[in-house]
Image (cartoon, rainbow, N blue to C red; front, side, top):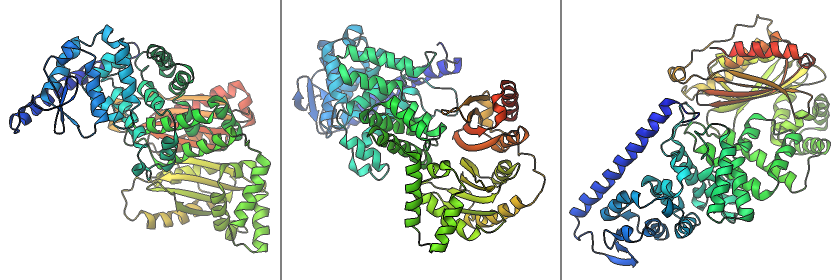
Length: 581
């Protein structure tokens, strides 16, 4: 119980006992069904030694099959995996599985025949998830893999993880196996394409089975899991590149998610460092697929199209680097400018005007935005380039419900970011990302990804009016209103999160990364922005991540004052005070 709360230990006992009750229910219900069927349960067509088939039901030739030969236990799951037309088990087979726990001892788990049968199950072409789910349901998986038994029914006392660790693990495997079916390609086409072309995809199944095996042991569960799966590979005679591949995926299963959501993946140095850690395209494909499945299986509200896009962008950028096509910043900027102009129908005068405007911005603007984004910016901003008034535009974000990209053109001034954030949050918009670009002529192009809760059917009409109001407010010299201090939800009071703030130089050492972890609430970002104003901090980019009731935000900031350790300590203290509820 090291590193685990008493509530987590208690709930694990509850879930394990609930599973036992579920097993008994299955036996009783199947027995009742057989009692009223036309044929007695024990009759059937022999399908292999010890097993019989009765229609779509798999049964035992005699009640003592497992007692005489415990190796048959795993065969029951292998038979059903290879015969999808036999999805049910007889009550006799259920009872035999229920009573077989004493047979599945240490000697049984270490039996080479049983280990080979298990590998055949996870290497199957279809039915892999169903077989593993049934094995877990009847306690067979935990008996064969004693380390897995420790996470059965294990929960985490927070508002982020919606499932027990074993449920989450098997759900992730289910998502992975869904990628092997072309009919699911409409959900995540890239994942389906990669999975169907992948050789040795069983290694991903094994990696997912062990990716959270180290939870509840104290310390870094990724490193603990990597050690455990390495030993498992030795035991099951998985060697060479396969063992290295599985161990890598377990050890690094959080890396891609952290890079995509917390670092600036438009920065070539970030991509290069990630690519060096990954090393090969085969590892990149595996890590990408595993990451998608892991996030999707964490909880129903965790996965969204925005995270899907971040991971896909990182995948393509890293793949390009691994294929020997490094990123030349100047060449990339030149190409994006040319491609953007090619996609517009500007007159020569308009081209000159937009080129002059682009000359004000550094490489970062063109690195952080796709060509399509740059084209949209150019089209909507062109009529307003000669105006001194602020301008706000927006468009729905493709592939994500209730999400919009807001584009703001205005003059740089103190408190600008705080003023924008304050207005967005007062309107009830949740901010997912902010990109800040200040030109040499003092004009600012800011873009925000915002999400509304979808509760207002007239949102689009009201939102159009809000954009006009926001532009007007930015030009007024009104005093910045105090940030809203929304109340935490009732659930977050029961699952408190200790506020954390850390400040460190970025990869290049020129700017600083401020990372915060706290309970999410209305007005949180505005409170942080107010601290930036007080300490004269310039915000470059913001990556906002909300995980249920938990906020994990990363800000790329700059100021010559940050070179002073004393100033940094005071700044961090002020940020922590702003995070307090």
